[in-house]
Image 1 (cartoon, rainbow, N blue to C red):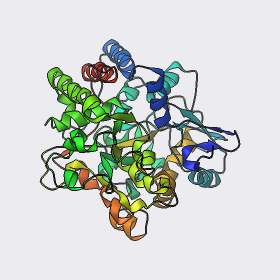
Image 2 (cartoon, rainbow, N blue to C red):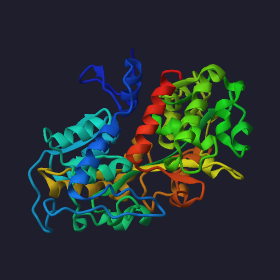
Image 3 (tube, helix red, strand yellow):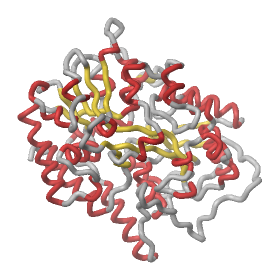
Image 4 (tube, rainbow, N blue to C red):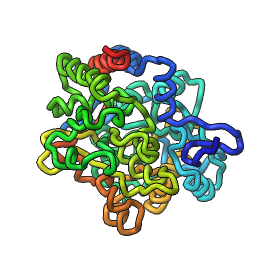
Length: 430
């Protein structure tokens, strides 16, 4: 069987390597209960109780500065570069190899990448002390627990001038890590709805105050899918049921959201996938799917050669005119793990990736947008990076400030456990 390069066929190994999407897909097939992250959060909470500190979970309206620890200082300024190789710890298939080659040349060292299947695996390995890496790529949702567990070392921003020079001010000083004490932004994305106009009537989405109702529209039974991800599926059902901020939903509201998802089994013959948006829609096997904006921007490259990619569309419900529902938006980060052996090189790698030209090079292959000031909607469309018909997939800085935007961050322990329990009920059919 032949694989598209983006489908992770490694010609050197003669096998397919796994991505962050694949892990969820494999876990679902194996019957693995997801997620197990609440156990890690509980461990962090227990550790914080012993030290008298609390997880610093912020929001755009209540930004937080992550705590510093006396036994975990930032490196001093003006230190010489270490010898390579620089060790990266990343999701598989989540960085452009051309960008890695360019960074290797610029830094004058080899760069090696080790991958993880999911964040629980990454956090458990980092916390065990059994592995040591120089750069890690955590989502913003796990930054508070990673800091609390002292898995990250503070940054010395004197080594990272590109943060202030090129990055959106709101993410150069993000709500979850004020002052960028531990992280710098990597990419961002919204979570919305993708569809094919030859299978789905756009008016059922674009013209509706509650666009999520389309997932319950029986006209599209058999061609509809949601992400096999508890945070995305449960949050969407909460939005659909009129909950503006899923992170503070009550137990009754989360249970009702799960009940709504269970309805889709008989009503829609719903399919939970990870590749539905960027593979199965282009191939015509699905006509409607929940979608991350980065997936949908890249979906144009997955259409068969004789198929027309202009049939695909994307909407972020939070930005639909007249909407009565919210939509999720979030970002991923780059950080330096505690105990990194090459912290100077790690800082310089972060700075390299934040350079506008290098960030654009990474976007060219990755499809997930970096939050650079100069990489705006006009540039992405005018220069052909994003076609007009996928313009709604472009994330703008002001999107994070919309009243209808739910900026997805870390859930507290009780909420995360509740969501996980209800998700397991959904996956077991109720």
